[in-house]
Amino acid sequence: MQNLRPQKNTEQDVHAAREYFPRGLLQPPDSFRFSADALLLAAWTAAAYGTPAKPLRFLDAGTGCGVVGLALCLLLDTVQGTGFDIDPQLADAATHNAAMLGLGNRFSAVQADAQQVRAHADITPESFDLVVTNPPYRRPDQGRHAATQQRTRALFETAGPLTAFVAASAYALRNKGRFFCIYPAERLPDLLCTLRPAGLEAKSLLPVHSRAEQPARLILLEARKNANPAITIHPPLVLYAGSGHRTHLTPEALAFCPFLGCNARGVQCHTQETP
Image 1 (tube, helix red, strand yellow):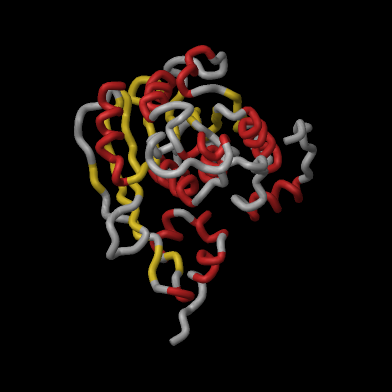
Image 2: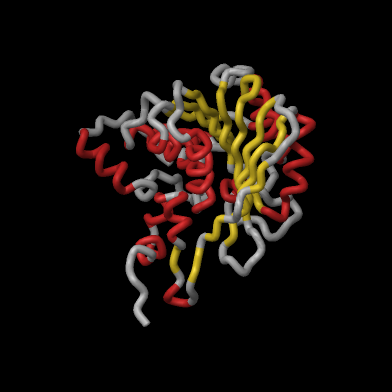
């Protein structure tokens, strides 16, 4: 990807980019394309704060093109943050996307390895109010690797295991700071067993189901640093209803995360079904 130059966007450019979000984000060739998981994570995090009474500083661990951090900035006016990614092209793209959305003064990204964040000047200990992360979730021996190194790193724990992302988050969080992540439901035991030794206590969990009759596919989880044990399990969030060409996002899914409506199925959900 060619070097990115600073953008000079007009108010109309910024307004259009925000209306179009998350479509239109720069994503380097051969990189992993973000999915609805990232949008759900941003919505989950924003819902936990409602209307924050004070400014909040967040870290987006494994930011990719910046979609989680940027969505969070659009949802909460009082937050500003830093993202990091092991891929320098993705970190550059995230900073570029922030400028395109008029968020360059609130979000930027740096190149950093989750296993070496302590060496990075922009990620200092106990300096963040919250961390958001959508980490690689497949074990290196789980399934077929992607066609490119960039996509493999985004999907598989090849450049850093879950423990590295959790340890980096615990290092960056202030005391009682909040950790938010999205992870496959089938790997919930791995996540819980990783959090507590790092000083992060699971406090809130939302199961996410593709359909009501199917097992949970994902979980959204909040943990807190140095908190007492006690967790709230929320009623499940079901994403889809209908079948075939009548498949649509549920009203509950769109209410939880309006950004989901950017795709064809989301638009379909706003229309009445015909017999």
